[in-house]
Image 1 (cartoon, helix red, strand yellow):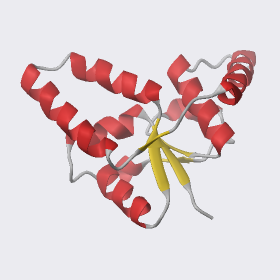
Image 2 (cartoon, one colour; image 1 turned 180 degrees about the horizontal axis):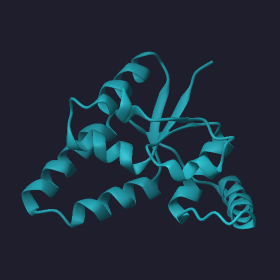
Image 3 (cartoon, helix red, strand yellow; image 1 turned 120 degrees about the vertical axis):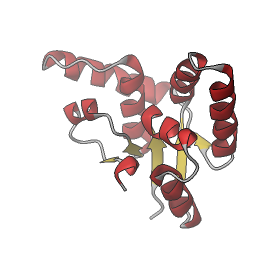
Length: 139
């Protein structure tokens, strides 16, 4: 069975910071094995928000690396099924007193709906033990 991966912002920006990073190596490895790796628009929004605060030279470097990476990545769409799942996640976190950011809930909803492996270094997702999570920055 082909595996599908969803990169969180921390993984995407780690990759954009260094072409030789473990994240970039893993993207290439799983892609060449026929698996799919991608991001969603909220991840791109967070990345661009982070890049906006950098010096012009550094921002341009990161944007060029991001353009290069996007040639290797899919863009996973958020749809109405993911929106319904978002509501479930919001309610379940609220019931146990946990708070996830709206973007994190979108990622979790998309990962659940599309059966994606969420690639993140963010421990906030521990609140959702059914998610399959990997951290490629550690490899």
